[in-house]
Amino acid sequence: MSNSPLVVYTKLSPNHSGKRNHVIDTITIHCVVGQVTAEGLGGCFAQSSAQASSNYGVDKDGRVGMYVEECNRSWCTSSGANDHRAVTIEVASDTKEPYAVGAKAYAGLLDLVTDICKRNGIKKLIWSTNKNSRVNHLNGCNMTVHRDYANKSCPGNYLYGKHGEIAAEVNKRLGAADSAPTKPATPSGAYKAGDVAQFNGGEVYTSANAATAAATKGASKVKITRVYDGKHPYHAISDDGKGVDGWVDASTLSAIGAAAPAAFTPYTVVVTADTLNYRSGAGTNYPVKGTVKKGEVYTIVAEASGAGSAKGWGKLKSGAGWISLDYCQKR
Image (cartoon, rainbow, N blue to C red; front, side, top):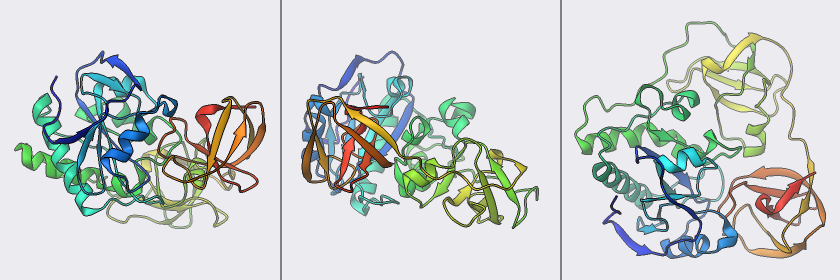
């Protein structure tokens, strides 16, 4: 396996599992949750305490950094099986949903993905809006996302919505035929505006925060408000008009019902690190506001993905800041 010639900065991270046990056949794109430089991201992944890494990063100016060589498995997607077969890429982004990516970073991402495919014999990128197809690589699907494996919004709704476009552009550069992204079929009319349908734990396309989106898991109920937008079959909100507000796949809906999804349930954690920083936002790119100590117990009132934490970040009930859940134990 070779590494990308597009790399302009290298800082190898200690956070990896050594040689892969699977050939490279998948691309997994992440958002950094910060408009970082290649050097800044490398500094983050260089810390063993971060317990996270990626093969590459594309910074805010489109520059490519390498942190784990392609021959090795990074710690990026909360799934060893995925990271053993995927080249993982962190992309500089805004710090709030939809975690938008700048034009330079997006252009750099397209160049990098094209190069990865060419060098690894990936002749065509295939994206699916169906989670089951992605995680099981059905119908040739070879693009996955972090939210497939963990309760995170990563890569954010901006990049998630761009995956079909990314596949089409890269396939054009690869000379692959039939590169246009496939849109979901128009619904047959099983649901109409005003119906309340049961959501069975599939995808929700939403601008809501990660905690709100997480509340849709576990067969929550949603109300259909519009039937088709040209991208996703149904637009839905919780049946009380609060909570979830986003597009859902028809395949994730079932019998008509009438109940609102549960709100995020606060829980307590005990700190397992000797000293743990809490920050102003969910990510190591946010300023440190203070520290908590091993054995102390705190209530978490929201969760979010962010740089430097494999398990995500928890918001302290006091409002003082966010702590990495990598160094906490749920009680």
